[in-house]
Length: 247
Image 1 (tube, helix red, strand yellow):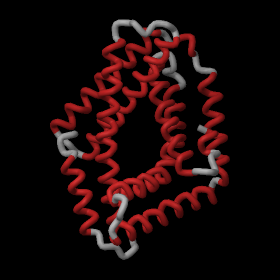
Image 2 (cartoon, rainbow, N blue to C red):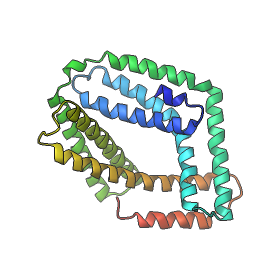
Image 3 (cartoon, one colour):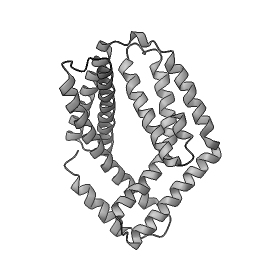
Image 4 (tube, helix red, strand yellow):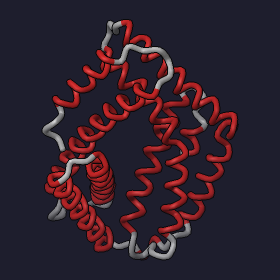
């Protein structure tokens, strides 16, 4: 994570990789929720603060990327103007963040301190039973979130469903790698977990695409630059309609 934030060649890629690593770390620490009970709340809070601090930077870059994808290889004048405004917004946020935290040194030090705290956790108390029970809890949480969405497809419920599906995917991916590395990949859950990884990947990607479209729509409406929004909003609405069956 610290190395990703030190990437001066592509700051936006570094921020993206750092945020992904923070999410992955949080999901894996949850697998040791019982043996880490005393330390986990504080660690989770520290991870959350780091991720939240990077969110505006990452979200502004995602808005640019989403707009570019929607605009296509030959963007209209309206899309060109919108993308230019979004790029200015993204670059301004990054410049302000680097002014406040030059080279992201403060964040990089926080990540190193976090790593030191994680290293001294009671790892020997984490057993196969502990991990598989935690995965089962995550599966139930995903099912619960899905049921809530079926009753009320609000943005908040969709976002909760996506977060839980993404966490479960990361946990299953990690556990399959561990089992394979230790020569225990043939355990009874193997085929089930492989299918679940693919299912959770498709689900989190689909829900993420919807979230990106909604976020872009909201951002376009807040831009102060003089833009012709109608055709852009219509394009976004068309894409959202095409994804209506998901969530």
